[in-house]
Image (cartoon, rainbow, N blue to C red; front, side):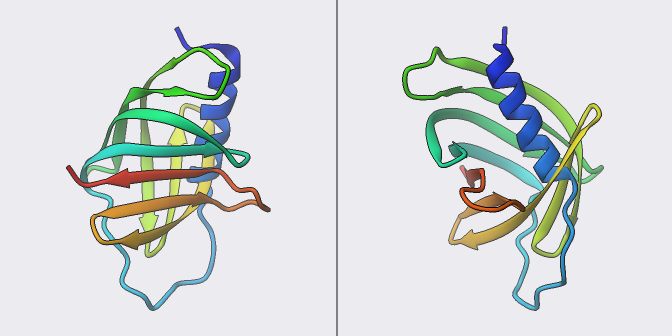
Amino acid sequence: MISRTSRLRVAALVALLAAACGKDNTAPSPSLVGTWDLIGFTDMGVAAVTTGTWVFRTDSTFSVIGSTTFPGEPTDSLVLDGTYVQSGNNVVLTIGVETGSWTITASGDQVTLTEVEPPPANTITLKRP
């Protein structure tokens, strides 16, 4: 079972992923469609040890199965389903009633989603398997 702290972190993560707004970028935008390994997550600048898989489907749904462990805290399971809307280098993620806006930065076979918030913004790092 996910602890209250972890649920709040995930809700914040989703809220930030779902409200993606911003100007279009002329740089190529990576498609999120497909399967990704979850290799990093930070919450307010604190890095968690992460494992898991994110799957973004062509029908604008996604699922996450994995775990996060923040320093000094127990490991929390991640089992999430939601919807997403990607527009260029921005993505909005929705899980239940929580939505959030994120920007996408690509480097090789990795993408980093960065919360659209003042620093230290939350980040999610994904890598193609």
